[in-house]
Length: 309
Image 1: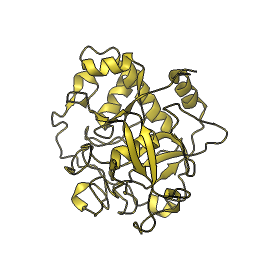
Image 2: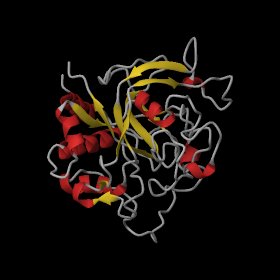
Image 3: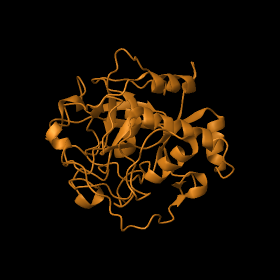
């Protein structure tokens, strides 16, 4: 089955619900997470191109290459006292993941402006709150995120301003989607298994966490981050395309290995603006019902090569 029909099947088959994994959030906590957007901000800083759906104004429209190779995944309970049990691999942790294929990761979380461009063109039935176009979109379910990714994939194949490198990748079978859980963790921490995207020590100015609201994507400079990606810690939790399963998990060569009867939760990564340092570590694994919509959940895009067999 090709990826496009499979994604369509998933987005039309999943029932929406309104609860989040109790391992990470309580009802009391959720009640205290809403925060007002700063309406005094200008609408745009020129970092995004209106002509291509407000995608980032750089050479690959915001996609950053992550090379093929090994990396460390998970936590070492002897070195990281903040670990959660679901981060520990059996036998040995962290786990050396071998030869994860090359992929491209979105430099920024998907913004309100980008999702509004999608909604305006397609009439997608979702109300998006917030006035600043460069804040991350939030309150989106997993099917909402997949629908947006499919739209961007389609638009990139037809937009005249798409960089030639992106066009070549799409013609070779690559596809815009959400990142897998493995892709997300490698993009966040590189090869050395660092605790946070910038290193092992906490730096409050490298991410938006322990605050009251989202900020513009890319507001926190992370010069020490391996791939120069923004907001991999904090701002909003980010959906991945991976169903939640206990470790060990396997690299499925970018084939979406989903069992709709078994897979009740989808992985989220990165933590949010409201979280403490424990939740914004690169190894922290969140999970939610795919239909849940919360003001602290968003997503970013990836470009990956998919198997079609």
